[in-house]
Amino acid sequence: MTNREPTILVIEDETPILHFIQTTLSGAGYRVVGAEDGKEGLAQAMAWNPDVVLLDLGLPDIDGLEVIRRLREWTSKPIIVLTARAQERDKVTALDLGADDYLTKPFGIEELLARMRVALRRTARTEAGESVFQLGELRVDLEKRQVFVAGEEIHLSPTEYKLLTVLVRHAGKVITHRQLLKEVWGPLHADDAPYLRVYMRQLRNKLEANPAQPRYLVTELGVGYRLRVD
Ligand code: CA
Image 1 (cartoon, rainbow, N blue to C red):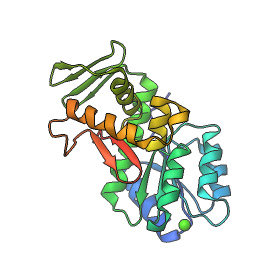
Image 2 (image 1 turned 180 degrees about the horizontal axis):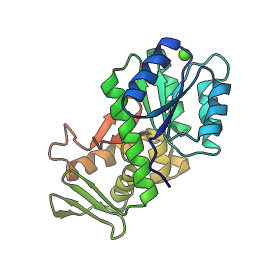
Image 3 (image 1 turned 90 degrees about the vertical axis):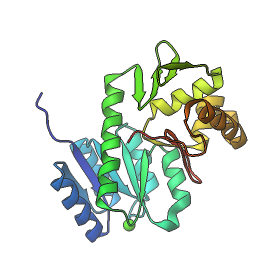
C-alpha cells in the first residue's frame, strides 16, 4: 500500500470559511474534500472514507448533530466540530455523540493545523494498539498497569487508574463530564459531576508538578477534560 496524504473532509456552508480551510489544509499537504451541506457531506464521507472530518454544526439542511450520529454508525475516524459562540450547548452534545474535538469560530491557521495533527496522531496510536503511553515525564503502561512520573512509580487507587486510562485511551481528545462519569463509574452516575472533580484533583496531585496549573490533565471549561498531547 502506498503512503498517501491524509484526506480531510470539510463540511461547511459558509463559502469563505470553507475556502479558508481548504487553502490552509492543501498548503499543509493534506488532500481536502469540501461539502456545503449535510447531505453532500455524508455522501462525500462514504465516497472518500476521510481520515478526519471537519464539521460545521450549523448546516442548511441536516443538523450537524445528526450528521455526527450518522457518521458514527460506520466510522470511528476523528470528527472535529466547528462551532459559533452561540452553540455552546451543542458543542457538549456533539462530543457526547462521538465528536473528538471542537474549534470555536473564528480560529486561526495554527490552531486548525495543531488540532488536525492531534487527531491524526490519535488514530495512528489507536490503530497501532500501543500499550505504553508516554507523554513528557508521564508514562502509563496499560499492560502492566503501572504509572510513572519522571521514572518513579506512582501508586494510584483503582478508580484513579481507571480515570487515567480512559483519558489515555482518548489522548488529545476532549471528553465530556458525562462520558467520563459513564466510563469510570457506569451509566447510573452520568450526572454525578462531584465524583469526577474529587478524583481529578487527586489524580492531578499525584501526576502534575503543579496541580493548580496542570500540564497533562487540562480542564475544558464547561465541557470536560482533555489529556493534552501537544
Ligand atoms: Ca454554518
